[in-house]
Image 1: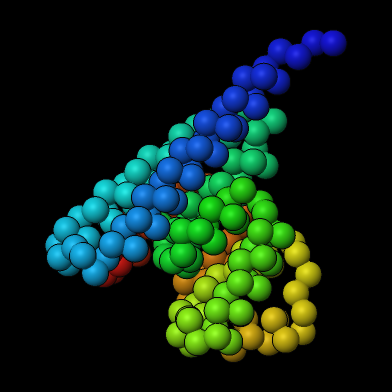
Image 2: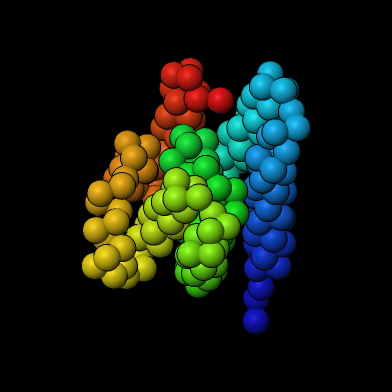
Length: 189
């Protein structure tokens, strides 16, 4: 059987997934050490990471235009990057699960957040934000939501998330970059 390109495609997908994991870990490390950094250093480092995400986005766009077998995988990853750079999602772990199309991982994370919130380990605001991100990611992945989850989303959705939910998975990378740039120039960090 002819397998031209199959091994290369698998290897490319693995490398891209690893690069996305690295960038998400970089964002998570930055958030975890936010209190240890001065505001300028935090903002500069975050901006550098956002620039790396933009470069990664451009690579994905270039690949998806030239290799139709990777379009769906790249589309999901582009959408996750869009969520990060437009600040619709703020939690790197959620962005990573979404990018890798792992609805069960998102459900598991939601269960863990709910448990931590009930135990008083997670503040109401942080719980609501991360719950909203997870539910939005699940909905964007085509997963069914309960009536209570839909109600929660409809009463708590931010403008960034609302726009993200309206955007198509095949949004052009130029538009993603423009959205990110406008979001950053309007006071995003």
